[in-house]
Amino acid sequence: MTTPNQLPSVQSVAEALRTKAYIADHSLATAIFLALKLKRPLFLEGEAGVGKTEVAKILSQMLDTRLIRLQCYEGLDVSTAVYEWNYARQMLQIRLLEATEQGSNAPEHADEAAGRELREAVIQDLFSDTFLLRRPLLQAIDSRGQHNGKAPILLIDELDRADEEFEAFLLEVLSDFQITIPEIGTIQAPTPPVVVITSNRTREIHDALKRRCLYHWIDYPSFEKEYAILHAKAPHASEKLSREVVGFVQELRRGELYKFPGVAETLDWMNALTALDQEELTENVVDETLGVLLKYRDDIEKVQGQTVREIVQVLRSQDSALASRDE
Image (tube, rainbow, N blue to C red; front, side, top):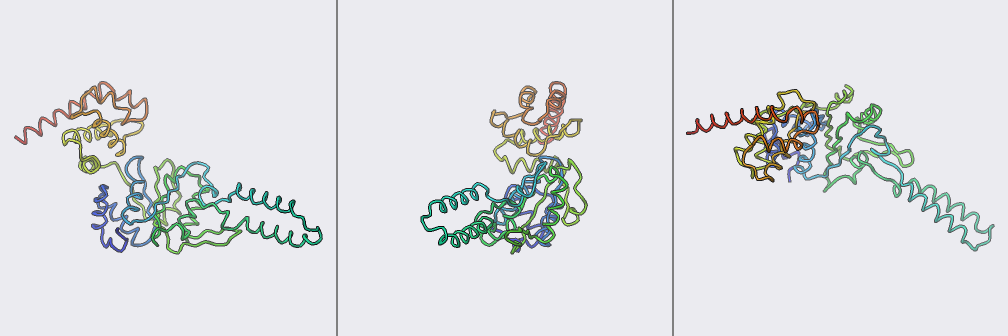
């Protein structure tokens, strides 16, 4: 498998991504190359479904290392993101200690000192590594998170969903890649993980965090790029259907919808049409499968019928023009 040292150029990164069926433009390949070279977090922002999360997944495959994912949400805290104590196991240990003391037949004066020492040892052990539950951030920093001696890929997904308080904590972690647990001490990464942060921009991320990262915006792809993505991900589909699917989605993105379909929805729609044995788009099949492409009722009602008919007619005209040119 590839290592960061085996990716000596932007072109080598782009080619490695392509072998994993990820079509990246030159600017994204450059951002990934620099993030690996400079050992800086990569901050990817863009609309949902444009391939931000996929970058981290593909990187873990390219570098043959573990992917550790932290899915962000409102209310995310340290116990979920970093660590917490195994309370159930701690209580079981305490119950075992109590049972041991109650079952002792030794004289009270003879057993008192030994019992006190045992209790102190158990209490100290309750907050040892044995009872520590490692969550994604600690997993990525701890050497146990490494695979074959390689630092993992840490994906912090949809950071914009988390609260600003967590964002501030994350900034501290990314500054030196170490976490302090009062009962144990400071754990520092032997090799910093490759960090990929994504955001759908539902809110602005603080500048202080962005400044620690290399920033890249992933936009909706052009027709040519989306067609290449479709061909790489769904090579079984006919050229005509692929061209029509991409053309239809591109037309939708020029309209006024609450939520435009992303590349992920384009791929889902192509798979659905292939499952229905479709060789080309028709008004009926588009109307019946819009729920694969669009996820809001108002958007579906706005597109169904007249809009679908108009777009399909445009695609038919383009197909005819292309066929005439090829003759």
